Structure formats: structure tokens, C-alpha cells
Amino acid sequence: MCGWTSAADFIIMERRQMHKQGQEDKGQAVKRIAKADFLLLFVLLLLGIAGVFTVRIMTQKSGASVRVLVHGEIYGTYGIEQEQSIKIRQNGSVTNVLQISEGKAKMVQADCPDKLCVHQNAIAKQGETIVCLPNQVVVEIEGEEASDLDAVAR
Image 1 (cartoon, rainbow, N blue to C red):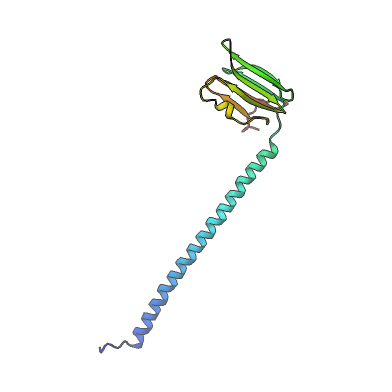
Image 2 (tube, rainbow, N blue to C red; image 1 turned 135 degrees about the horizontal axis):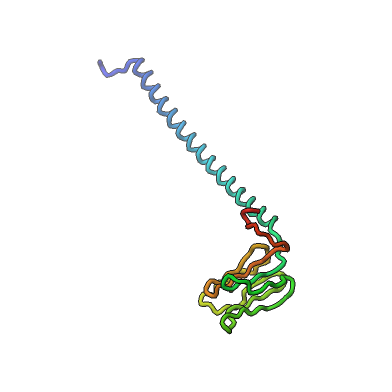
């Protein structure tokens, strides 16, 4: 052969080149679809999370009373509409002070070292809690009707 390519060789090389380009184009199309799918999934996930929070906020009821537990036993139950300051005493000394005002309950003072209970936001909705682990104090908001069912069973 004298270095010239025949027409058949030329056609074969052209088809191979077109075949390679076709595969590259298909690969790029798949990547574009994957990016679009990822974006769609991300948007659907955000909408789902927003929906869950919206339903939770819309269905959560305001509380009627504040129940204080110390060492797992009821220390007292107080109306949430009546403004008052409750001094929680253990072993003769005040360990925590709970303030109820404007329909909310907030731990304003504690003698525990970390004071995480004091830094928690005020609570007002049924089922919300403030917990002071070192002093074993739990403050929870109760609804009007007492129920033996937990949040999952409702």
C-alpha cells in the first residue's frame, strides 16, 4: 500500500469518530439529567421539611398549665395564665426559680454549674419542656385534657 487510505478505510474511521462523539454526547446528557434530578430531589426535600414544620406548628396547642417534676415526682401544677414566680426547693434550699408570665414559663435561676435550663427559651405550647439535669427538675406544659397517649400514639 502506498500510504493512501481507501474510501472504505475513510468511511470506517468516520463512523468510529461519530460513534465516539455519540458516546460522549450521551455521557454529557446523563450528567445533565443527574444534575437536574439532584436539584429536583433537593427542592422536594426542602418542601417536605417545610411541610412537616408547618403542620407541627399549626397543630400544636397552647398549654393550660405548667407541671413541675422534681426527682420524677410532681412538685406542683400551676396555671399558665397566672403570673407568678415559683421557687423550687430541694433539701431546704432553693435550687431553681421558674417564672410564669405572659402565658409562658421560663427558668430564670438555677444553682447548677452549667445553667443550660436557664438558657433555654420560654415554653408555652403543649408538650414543651425545660429540663435541669443536675437538679433533676423537669418543667412541662400540659394541655387542658390529660391523656395517657404519647405524641406518637395520637
